[in-house]
Length: 414
Image (tube, rainbow, N blue to C red):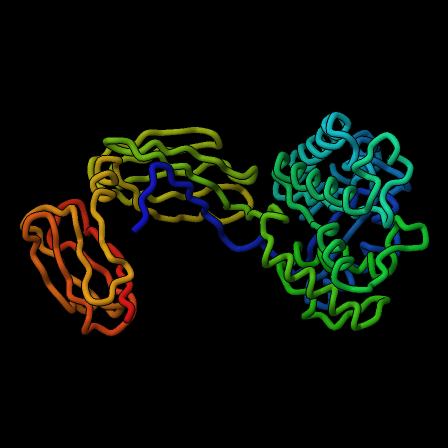
């Protein structure tokens, strides 16, 4: 059994609600416009059963700071009705020295995400992580050596895009990370002749990555292949889905009803603090005899002397109310439990539970819940004979104690 002085509870529901039609706005530059990325994404999504209705403003060389004040970009955002807004920065800016990134990239992302949410309360901003240039950034290599190679430039792009997503509570389509995996494991030519813009295969990498994010679906389920070789498409889709499944933090994904509760046990209760995403108005935490409504960053102290079940219900305009329950116990009980030790564990011939109160009753149950042995503590220890028991998981459980059952897992091996 695991005990903590600080418990971080993450409440997660299904991925962003998916409908038959998604309205997607692209704000970027030639990396977005090359090879008709929005069209490729829409055709791929259609083959997966979802219509993507999109608009785009992607003038060549545009920066996100430029989009902040761009009349067309602002008019598109303010028109409202978007489910997703995909933001693509100029390809070099996120790999620049930190002071420039802090002055240009992060503030632009923050300003755009704020404007998006002001006019589209349920829209999710998603950063389009781009890729390092094929042979590094030759134009800035002399003054900023980290970008002299593809690997150095990509490392900075990855770091800064993920940081920007974290700072702005946005999603990230980690196209650059998938790109790097494909560079390292395949011979697919992802670049056009300038070593910067994407080839048709490179554009498909971006479309496949975005499809996984928007739909939560393996892009390999589609028969659509775009303008690339079927074998290349299969390798790209496999890399995308592997990244989706194995690196969830790369996407900074969350759902409308997600929140974190940081719970710090106290001697006679617990301090509960809420960290909520921007789509929630509040979370109501109820102990059964008292309840509190929390907004993001707020804390409240619950008073109790025995383990208690708290129910937390999330409220927001973008999803139905979601409720989860969890058990928390005061520090005094946790300290008492930590003093009890079950050894050896795994056990072969026997197991001893030390640190219990004399005279307390204990039972050993198998994985089906059947009692296989019953013991009463003589002094501060209880001994269970395991030599004749089948191998597998068991639990040692207190009988008739106040404050709820005390349970300790035991693995029997032979």
